[in-house]
Image (cartoon, rainbow, N blue to C red; front, side, top):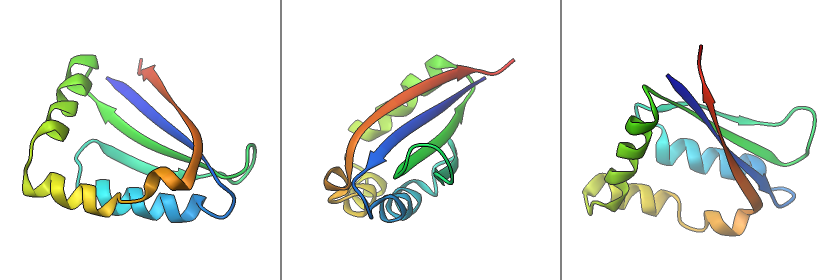
Length: 97
């Protein structure tokens, strides 16, 4: 099993807005575990935690984003403008033992 952390460092005042947007857009995804904001450490951080059986399942999950389904249209609509809310980001992939 692997756990993915997608990390966003937001512009000041946008972390909670981005967290709500991400939760609304991805909340029905079976892979989503949590959307978190910082309480200590680097300010304005949002971390999206998702879980997959392995790297191949993670890679396969990206295929649905290429499809022009009603679900993807709703997700795109919910995520509109999210790029303007953050400065930088990164991804961490962890193996669960």
